[in-house]
Length: 249
View 1 (cartoon, helix red, strand yellow):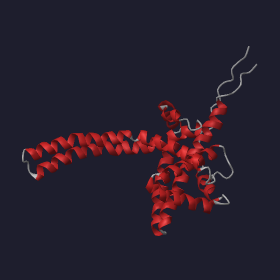
View 2: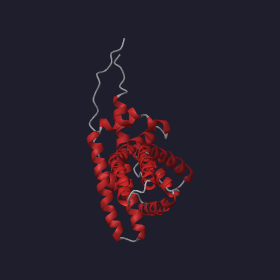
View 3: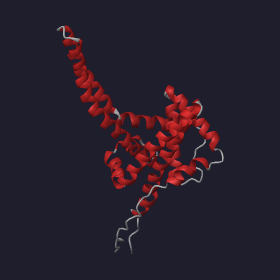
View 4: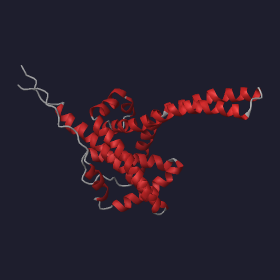
């Protein structure tokens, strides 16, 4: 006969902002790694670079989850970075599909109206209103959906980190939203901090050289994925341990 131990609630999760900043610069080779990150961010203009950077960020989040002392990965095994980055890219695209649907609906509504108005000899002012009204309605849908996608995608990427890049895990919506719900306050804080850091660093980048813009963007992304790795560490280590308490004999 065994008696189950009473459930012990794990300590509440708190973001470690200082470590998210320090981890980037304490690596002995941080300058070289940031320079390569800036280079691949620049190559992101050609998609290929964006996928490599996304893979690197996910690898960084994995190393934070494992509490590596120097979590910045080496720029090597590019095939693996491409694989991870492609999966992260697919996740982001799928969660952004409602945005594409809104754009398609705007075009679907606007174009027949414009064609009909032109065929009937309507004035340019009338045609302008026919374009303006669907655009306003679409914009009212597009902006909330855009922010929702930006808000959710990190939680979906966290599932890739936690489940060895199993693509299906990123679309288990109950699990994705469960992570957000459990840590809503800290997750909102992460979202706000990343937005502020990105805006602040982009201003610094504008005063730096051309490469500086891409370097500061990359630093903001590293900051975000360190915070995301902290969520994953908590989910795996703290919550995982709390859910696996042995029964008393």
